[in-house]
Amino acid sequence: MIMTTTNTIDHKTIKTYKGIVTGEAILGANIFRDFFAGIRDIVGGRSGAYEKELQSARKLAFEEMEMKANSVGANAIVAIDIDYETIGANGSMLMVSVSGTAVLAE
Image (tube, rainbow, N blue to C red; front, side):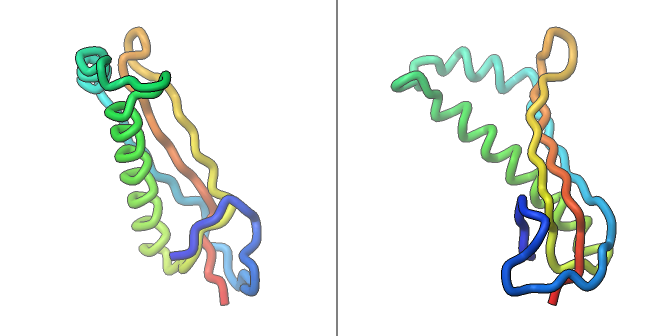
């Protein structure tokens, strides 16, 4: 599956637009508790443990979006947008959402 943030794919022609596809992943309150418990992991202003959890959530969101694109017969997703939002009481959860346009490209 070709995935890109651009509206086109180099050396390919978009033949059919299959529709918008999305994927979401939510990190619950436990990640924040674990984050603060593992504050010693911070080096140079960055937390390796927290970044690893965000990468995992982003990967899950992309996998979900790709499955949806496959289910409509697409072989690529263009114009991908990635968002990070805090949700829940007092922003206790973090949501990673991705969306794009599923296409058939040749």
